Image 1 (cartoon, one colour):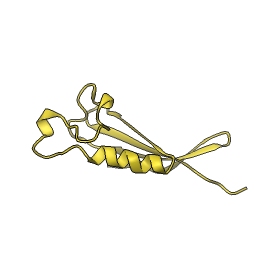
Image 2 (cartoon, helix red, strand yellow; image 1 turned 120 degrees about the vertical axis):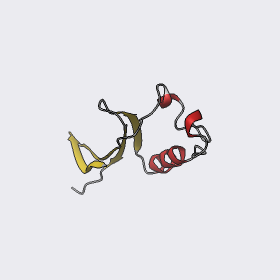
Image 3 (cartoon, rainbow, N blue to C red; image 1 turned 180 degrees about the vertical axis):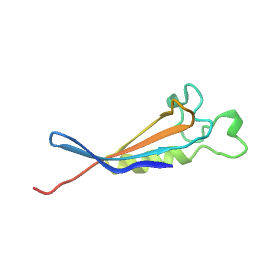
Image 4 (cartoon, helix red, strand yellow; image 1 turned 90 degrees about the horizontal axis):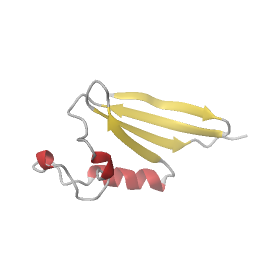
Length: 91
């Protein structure tokens, strides 16, 4: 489920485009924020279905565009991923 796509956050002169992605799965295991962006790293229970390249590659691409990616878990379960990009506006 994608929520708040193209939401414009305006704080003074700094504007950002935020894309928030939520799912209803198991979410990230505790402490995953410390290693989930390390290339070829995955949790033991996902080793059969994952080689640990998706989020690291996504982060590299997003950062090349001066953006950032934040991860966490939803209070009601599932993962939450936010993509944040600077918005260039013409004056």
